[in-house]
Image 1 (cartoon, rainbow, N blue to C red):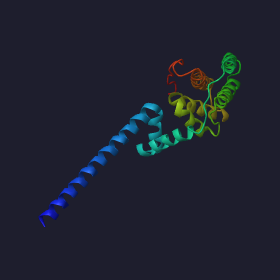
Image 2 (image 1 turned 45 degrees about the vertical axis):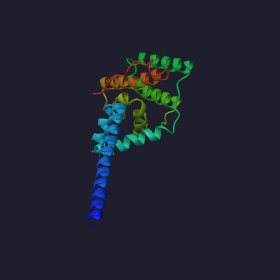
Image 3 (image 1 turned 180 degrees about the vertical axis):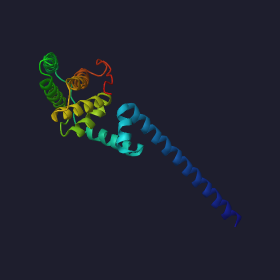
Image 4 (image 1 turned 120 degrees about the vertical axis):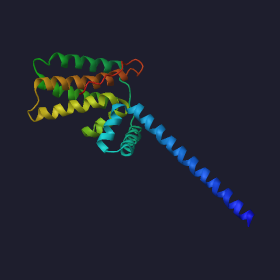
Length: 195
């Protein structure tokens, strides 16, 4: 009987040790995942938590975005395409004073064209912004801010200053996409512009 009790005790202790180790390991893995996602997504991580209402839902969403983007081949621009896009943006920006509404529309179109050329899917806006956030989390925030102003403009509620801000936001994403086509180490680090 003592032998049976000792064996049972040894098994119970072993099971408890395994369970504690599994719990510690799972907690560590969860912490590692959170840290990796925060490092990768930056301000987009916090935005996802606010939007979903919980850390676990936000992390599931961000992981889903990463898996989705693995299905696409994001390619660098050829030097000729990079020059063409850069020149188009320079022309566009020079027209703002004379035609702010037209420049806003053209900036939105040019960013979508650049996204498509790089291989990003250009479906509906929210999906496009979520996809952009995987590789460009800081400027994804700017892209959303610009789109809010485009919506205001479509309702006739955007001021010239609003349109100027939207073009600046579009430019942040545009430059990031154009710069990253040359390689991340050659691109200047993005700055968060949206307020």
